[in-house]
Length: 335
Image 1 (cartoon, one colour):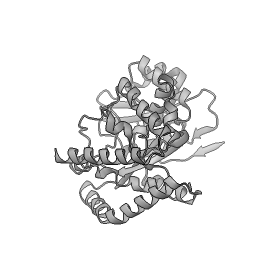
Image 2 (cartoon, one colour; image 1 turned 90 degrees about the vertical axis):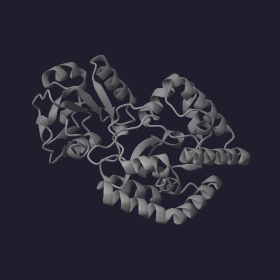
Image 3 (cartoon, helix red, strand yellow; image 1 turned 90 degrees about the horizontal axis):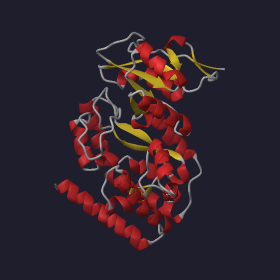
Image 4 (tube, one colour; image 1 turned 30 degrees about the vertical axis):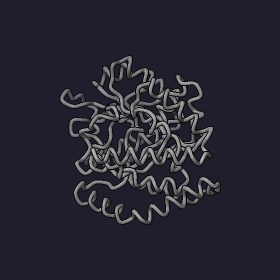
């Protein structure tokens, strides 16, 4: 039986607090426990984590040393909400367990609870990013012509842009006083879960706890430096590491978060086939369609992604995407 000993933060409080957003973590696992431990560095001062909720009634393998942090079980969520005055939930359920994740979302929606997805949080610990990079580089490389081309271009770009990467890192460390890099779980080629790296653009002590802001809206939790990095696309420079590690290609379909990937698979035919091609930084769908999450526009993007998957070896198609992407990037910077 697994025992996890943690020094829980002082923000964990089982008393009702009407002046705070009382939050429960659904998921007693490594992700949920790490989130609980690091909550003081992630949530705002108006938010409090009251404890954790088990995903399953028969969950006997996952235990914590302090049973007082366990509020109840997912099947009894309505009783737990009433007892502790919970107004929001963080879904710390593993992306591979989509059925449980869907069940938790339905439970929250039926009770009118606001819920956050852990995939919307950036890394809880920088060490996890470092560990992931090391593990990816010790795996056998994907020796294909496309990977070799991607690797050479990414390595050359990394060397040329290293002074810029170093300068941005120093500025973030000096003025933001937080972490320099962050990562998000995404779905890679053949539906393998990967992590994408970016510069940290969110203000300290409030990372991207998602509030479902559309991609085109300005997020008030982004720092001034972060807004500049996002507008100029410099935020994506660390993705060169993903290309070197073989997770990304320079050109390919945009990777999606696990929850939305599973969601779109259920409502869009052949959605998963878009990832027969390795995800990329630049994509045909992004240069041909609007960048938003409305389902009809997602369907339209999938058509372009499927077309690219079938014609990914076309030199002229890849060149077209690269040229149009850089033109769009140049236009956005000049606005």
